[in-house]
Length: 170
Image 1 (cartoon, rainbow, N blue to C red):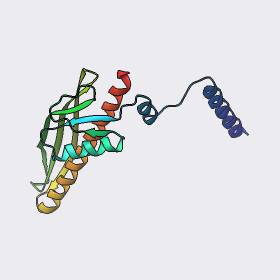
Image 2 (image 1 turned 90 degrees about the vertical axis):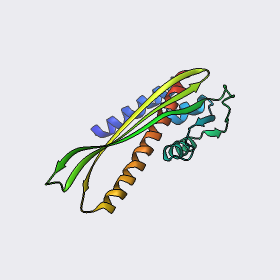
Image 3 (image 1 turned 90 degrees about the horizontal axis):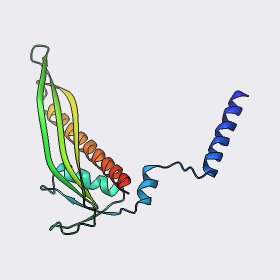
Image 4 (image 1 turned 180 degrees about the horizontal axis):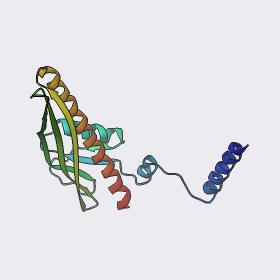
């Protein structure tokens, strides 16, 4: 009985909110209302892993990538990667030099230009991992997978910040 009352109150509240003009929104709804479909992406190393991940994320979020090598089109929003810094630090040695704990850090500084307003975006991602010196091939493949993971997460964060800037710019 109590469950039925809760369901009824939820449906009633939702109906009232929908009738008074309140809309439940998502990023897709906000993105589509701002009509930003084209974007330019600048990176010094166009075939770098990060550049490929960012292009993929922009395509997933329905952005059309426009090539403007001379940076002449100021009406189209643009994303520019200014600096990428990757660092691999040894943090701790465990069990008589058999296991080592490392920290993999990725720092990205990007510039987002929308309607002649420049926004600087800083992204920092850390990952910790252990290595066993008796298995170097496993360690190399693990590091390669971790690098892909942090670059993917950085690309997702950059596109998320881009969407937030687009939403707040209007």
